[in-house]
Image (cartoon, helix red, strand yellow):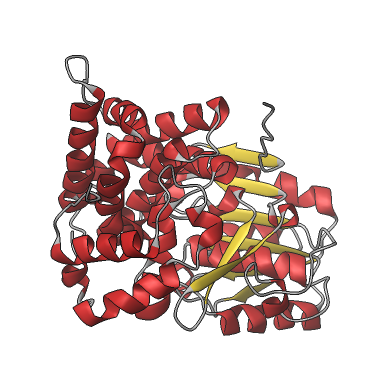
Length: 393
C-alpha cells in the first residue's frame, strides 16, 4: 500500500537558523509584512530578532500581538479581518503554537471570502481554494510542531475545531533552538510533553507508516532524554537543541500519521477550562495510553526502548506496562500535575468533557483501540482519580 508523505516546502533547523530569514524573504517580493507574535515575546524584546533585520533591509513591518493561548474563534476572525483590510504582502508568525496557528490562518484566509467559521472542519461550508499570502513560521517553543503542519486550532465555546488544508503549510519554517532559551520552565515542560505526545500518538496511530515511525521514534529519543534538563536548566544549549529537533521531528510524524485519543480528549479540556494544550495532553497521556495498552503492546515496547530503557528481557506486555509507568513518571518529573484534580477540574465536569470528546471523530478514528463514549468517560475518570485503569473484560 502506498503512502502520501508531506513536508513543508523549506525548513531551516539548528542553532542560528534564524540567520536565513532575510534570504528567504527576498524570494517573495514582499514590501509590507505582518508579524503575528505573542505579546510576551514583544515585551522581552525577542521579536526584535526578527523585526530589526527586516526594517534595516527596508521592509515595512507591523507587529500584531492580539494573541492568546488556546485562541478562540473570535481572535482568529479579528486577525483575518485585519490582514484583509491592511493589504499585507506576507505574514510571519513568531512564538508558540497559538501565534503560528493564527499566522497560518491569516495568511491563507486573507485572500478568501467569508468568515473563519465558514472553514471549520466540523461545521464549515466553504473550502480553501487559494494559496494565500506567503508565510514564514518561526517557533519559540519546542512543542506544537505548528510550523510544519497544515492545521490551525481554534477554541469554541466548550471544545475545539480546526481549519485544515495543505495551503496552510508555511512557505518557510525556521526552527532555531536559540530562540527557546528564554522559555520559562513551566512552558518548557508543557510544550515538551505536547511534542512527546505527538510522537507517541503518531507511532501508535492506525495511519502510521515506516516514514512516520522513524520520525516518531527519533523524536521520542531526543525529547525523553532532554526534557528534564531543559526544564531544570533552561540555558543548557544541548538540551534546547535536542528538544527543538525532537519537536520538529514529532511535528513531521504526527502531520503524516495523525494523533489520536490523547488529543481528542485534550481538546474539551482546553475548550471548557482553558487549560493549556500541552498541559491537557500531559495530564491525559498516561491514562489514555494505559487504557489502550493492550491494542498496541508491541509499539509501546518500542516506545519504552526509545525512551532510553531496555526491554531485552521483557515480554511485550511487561514492556508496555513499564512504558505507561515511565510516561507518567516523566510528566511528574517536569512538575505537571498528574491528575485532573491537580488542575482543579471538578468531578461533575467529566460527563460534559465526555460529550465533547466523543465528537472528535476525525482524531478518534486513528486510535488503535476504538473508544466508545463509555470508554472516554472511564479515561477521564481515571485521569481525575490519578489511577491508570484498563477496560473491563
